[in-house]
Length: 156
Image (tube, rainbow, N blue to C red; front, side, top):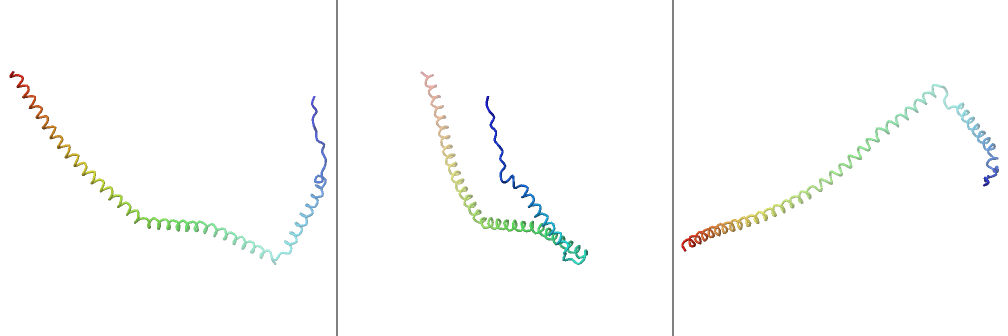
């Protein structure tokens, strides 16, 4: 049977110092609380009314700062977006004459090609007419020759 391995637990320095650290933290916390309470008693306000008015004034200033931030932040973004849009439109405006020029050149090239193709089609049509009339003449001649051959065959 196998033996189960166990580790012996040894208390380290940290384990022994825990109560001392806890006592020191509690003492520091007590001192801070005591000092805070003394500061509250030694107030710069002569009366509770002064304290209340200062408190309300501070709160109002905080709210005003918060509102100003929320109002000006979207306005600033909107201004930035408008500036960016103006820049984009200026760029498009500058490129517009060049784009028009390119479009005009392309249209001119297309018109020239169309004219060339129309001329070629007219030539092909003329050649087709000529070939058709030659074929018509050839068919007429062939019919005539066939007719003559049949008549000659009947005579003999």
